[in-house]
Structures are given as C-alpha cells and as structure tokens.
Image (cartoon, rainbow, N blue to C red; front, side):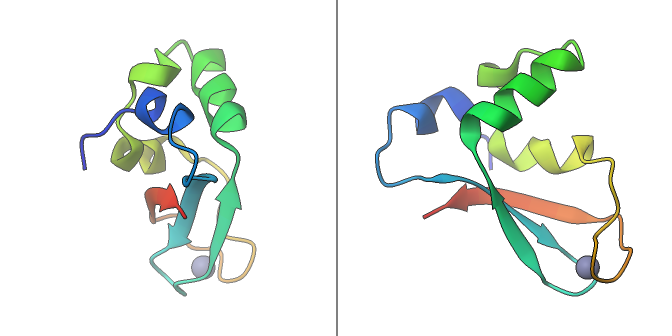
Length: 76
Ligand SMILES: [Zn+2]
C-alpha cells in the first residue's frame, strides 16, 4: 500500500492507523496525528510516509505475544 498518511488526514472515515501483529493477529488503532508525530521524531517526513511502511518503524514488541512483525493499514 503506497497511500501516504497525509491522504488519510482529509479522509473522515479513516480514524487512524490499524497496527496488526502478524504473530497473533491482535490489533490496535493508533491516531494518525500521533503516528505522524512519532515518524517526525525519527527524522522522517511523517505525512509523506506510506501507511503500509509505518509497520517498519514500530519498535515495541506486541504486548500479547511479544512478536515484532506488524502490518499497518487504515483503521476504518
Ligand atoms: Zn502479537
């Protein structure tokens, strides 16, 4: 998925970024603005980051299974 985060800021049906753990398929939703600020803190251009690439910048392991592989998609 190569749609940038900025696109979803104008998209009222998208409530944020859904982070899914590929280990247990558990997911949680993060706010778009929080994700953008986080990316910017890492020195990246938050709004121009593709939503599917956000998963690569998740550092904390899954609280349920300890997995470190995630997938990110729009939360609707
Ligand atoms: Zn998990």
